[in-house]
Amino acid sequence: MSKTERGIALVTGASSGIGLVTARALRRAGYRVFGTSRKPMPAQDGITMLICDVTDDASTQKVVDEVLDRAGRIDLLVNNAGIGLLGAAEESTTEQAKAVFDVNVFGTIRMTNAVLPVMRRQGRGRIINLSSILGLIPAPFNALYASTKHAVEGYSESLDHEVRTQGIRIVLVEPGVTRTSFEENITRPDQPLAVYDTVRADAERLMREIVAKGDAPEVVAETVVKAANAASPKRRYTAGKAAGQVRFIRRFLPESVVDRNLRKFNRLPD
Image 1: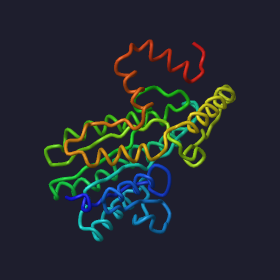
Image 2: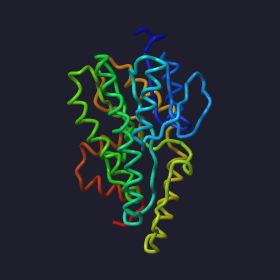
Image 3: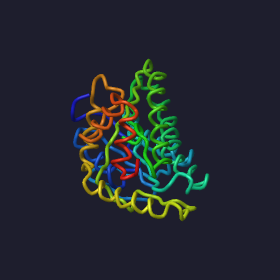
């Protein structure tokens, strides 16, 4: 396809933040873009907004069917919808842990399962899953969120091997810390424990500091466009300088060095 006819893109969680900026970037790159949100929203800069709850099987299938009715195909799926959780691992009930996984992991799986038959019939397609540098390293006081991103990493890389011969590629984009609305994207533990009150508050303060200094959402959006348009995509793309540094450190430095630096960064005692 020419630049003006890149194809049909579907971006989940496109009401704000990284999702909205990514949808706009894909639109500028020549895609016809459909975005999803949990509540009705008007069109955004030429992006058609559709209602979708990624935690519901019927809702995910319905939005895929609606895109097909309107556009006839889906060439690109960007699984961006996600939620965060800040707190010690044992401060969340099993139900809260399930809720985070339901959005971040099973939401990705639901959307992917709904789109794969479409792409298989077309003989081509690309799925970009938004991971995180926290899918590569430990994350104290983000254990459950990091677990979901580790799961997305393993799922995506494995699935890519399964569907590559069908003309479909699965690609990971790994942002670093991004300047998005902290309050809109974070959940707090539902069974807080007094033993963690001080260190949890310190972790939240640190998170606010690094978010304020993080990459602009456009950095992630540009990386998504690059991954979408690559003729032979890499398995994973880091988004931003810090993300690239973390990936290098995790791959090449001894575990003891990574451990020591991680504790220092998170202002934890040795």
